[in-house]
Image 1 (cartoon, rainbow, N blue to C red):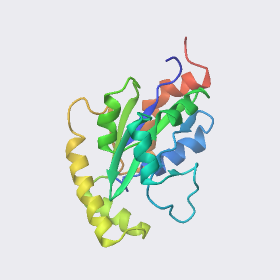
Image 2 (image 1 turned 135 degrees about the horizontal axis):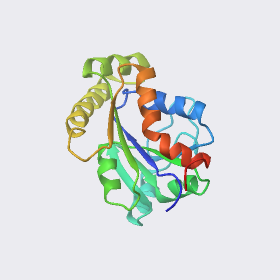
Image 3 (image 1 turned 45 degrees about the vertical axis):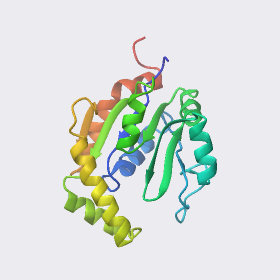
Image 4 (image 1 turned 180 degrees about the vertical axis):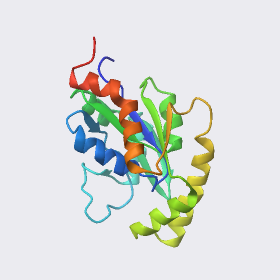
Length: 198
């Protein structure tokens, strides 16, 4: 497939993926397209169906997974999450860099496809910082916080696996992390803007 490569962003909740993504979209709004994931969890206040996620029932999602309509999917905290092939194709059809925000299981699943994205992992500087960030959100119960921290610890270890990621960004300074991310994506941004050498 010609055009810009998709980007797979991974990392634990609270590492700053969403914040970095928002900055990218503010600066290069027309260059990036976000593949909207599916989930079986309930919407949080302010989330919109089709914009933040496609909120679906477990039955619908399991049927579509079985039909092979998903690039990746995973279960987390009792809910299914996944990226459909159609969501990625919709973004690529607009000559945009498709951004996929997935967990480690998702990264491994995408590695088995022919998608050929850039794999970037965003990490918090430490689990302590991650816990502070998650607590500051006020969206977690103690139980879900504990699950997220356990998952984050496992993610951090697995992200060191050779060849799993093209780049690991430790988000201890937002501006520095953003500039590293921008530099990593500069070639694809040029392609999407039509200014790359062809």
